[in-house]
Image (cartoon, rainbow, N blue to C red; front, side, top):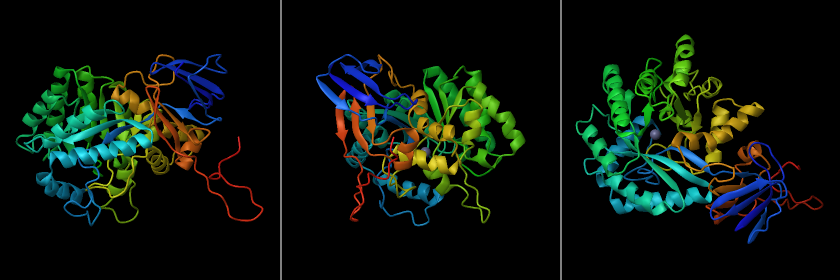
Length: 424
Ligand SMILES: [Zn+2]
């Protein structure tokens, strides 16, 4: 065996598990494996998880904070306006450089798969070319999936549909959309139909920015689900944001949730961004705006948490840490029950892996040996501590190592404290 990890805890609660890795894949997994590794790692009871997956990001905008100015109000609309000012000044080199830097951050935090939307409304398709180049360059260490995203509206922006088709022909993986940004509800629904038909014809997945609004009557998710059903796209369509669902009438939602479930449509909430951008027209009480995560999960819908933005026109914070995203999602959705907290961990690992259709993801013999060793004993503790990534492994190779977090109290007679971890 190339590598054996001893004495790991797994996200499903199994303890004292050994993981044997050979030729980039998990060869065996079980207690006290009688196998010798060329390298052996003692997990010391810590959690080993498949890597973090971000189902929703904007890599064409990331790390552009301050260009050409910062978002003073912190609102969505100033962010979109600012992005419009920035777009004409973008260069391919700068886009590639910033994206590669973000991917380095991601790897160090055990984030090894990202679905990024890329704006296709600039006729030069500069960002598309840049992110295709980034996808090629990071392929050995990070799976980057690209979504053709018509930021200015598919029907509202005259060249958007033609550009989206060009972007797909160039190799972009997924069809995007933004129905709530079209001029009318009817145009929004029409855009959903056009995009789903185009995706079905090409055999592609769909992931739309859908109903990112506090308007309870923004109901494009209904059209998206019914189109997914009509066109046989079950399991291949995601609705991103779905924030209007927060404000919808409860009776309507009770009818909507089974439709989403039957259509096999996944939901992607973006807690860091939803909690900061939604509810901005409210005085008090002020809505949180994030979609109905526990209710969607209870209805049998796959729900992932995405990072969405990091240091860009919409959000001045963020660091590629999906545990921070899970931590925020847990709080905003009030998912503090024991099972619910564990679900928040799955929302940044297994669930988005399923939404992206990642091949060979997981902790079973035959899966890729893509693993993260966390400085935590279980999934809830990992979220609580935003635990250090002791080791990040891809295809059996160690990509990144971090020391355990250790705070030593300088008080005489007190034992050293390691980030206040529970003794197991
Ligand atoms: Zn987004």
